[in-house]
Amino acid sequence: MQDILFDFISKYISLTEDEKNAIVSLDLFRSVKKGTTLLREGQKSQDCYFVLKGCIRKYYIIDGEEKTTAFYTEMDALTPHCVINKAPSEYFIGCVEDSILTVSNSDMEAEINGKFPKFEIMCRIMSEELLAKQQINFDEYKTSSPEQRYLNLIQNRPDLIQRVPQHQLASYLGIKPQSLSRLRARILEKKS
Amino acid sequence: MQDILFDFISKYISLTEDEKNAIVSLDLFRSVKKGTTLLREGQKSQDCYFVLKGCIRKYYIIDGEEKTTAFYTEMDALTPHCVINKAPSEYFIGCVEDSILTVSNSDMEAEINGKFPKFEIMCRIMSEELLAKQQINFDEYKTSSPEQRYLNLIQNRPDLIQRVPQHQLASYLGIKPQSLSRLRARILEKKS
DNA sequence: GCCATTTCTTAACTTAAGTGAACGATTTTA
DNA sequence: TAAAATCGTTCACTTAAGTTAAGAAATGGC
Image (cartoon, rainbow over all chains, first blue to last red):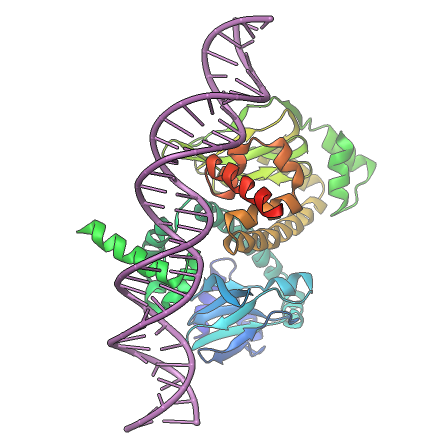
């Protein structure tokens, strides 16, 4: 399981055995049951997540309704906004499937960064990469309809459609579950 | 005019006179007429922009239709995606008003970064800050209707509504110009 | 200043998403 | 295992955005 983490890191920097051991000794690995809420609105937290196995999601509750804005699966990293700006969180983070995560806080990161300055470099590259990806994603969302977004999802993240409940998917696409059902029926009709 | 640039930079790092002079000597400042296209789809470019005065926009042309996804005004920086991934641009950048920009390319940045490592630090902070802002922005867009997005815009960037043509604004809100007209009429009706 | 073009608004009609309700299927839990 | 809760789908109806078209207002070019 640790290999997944090291595979991920090796995309950015190379690690010695010493460095790997230092990471393992931090004891970051956590098993989390489906349905667990990792972060609540209003809460202050220092925890950052990396998904080794499973799926977690970010969602807001607006007028009593859940609005899912992101899913994180294998090899995705999530730094909650409240960690960056040290303010109460605006959103929730919940566990969609039984998952294995690494959970790290600022202290741990400071420790690693102090010992191995390489890590700062990795973080910079990751945040630049993520920013670029995020911008393209945002543009794609803005320039397409719910139906196009659903078709894109089938292309780009087909696993999500299987592993995530329909009502969370609908919310992620910006529509109600009933509309997603209808939209799928419409697509099937067109094909035939 | 240069002061705007230095004010901006001073939010991140402090500059000596020498450093300021080095920047000025790069001759980055450009006056650009309204309507000018700074970057076209398919083009490869190394140019990054910083708006000192005026307004530029990013837009796609999809099925012959302009889709505006961002406006950049005073103190906004824009690094096109094609600069990062060295691939042809997916979008256009156009000048909405007569503007004064700084235009920098990789060579200039390499030169400055070489002379003053401070700049790398500034870039890292900026990209992290931008990433956080971008994520919140994306979430806000996803969780609101066109009408709410318009009302948010009135709150957060009231100047845009005055200085940007309606049809570009509509596109930015994810709707057609006719729908924006109607939506505005609807809001006025509600108020009375 | 005048003509052509672009931009903005309004209107009537179409299409797609929201809403409320019902129903069966699945999952939870007591 | 039985009852309760959640989930996904379908339907009828409402609301908002897309489309097409027309006309008024503003803008730009000559």
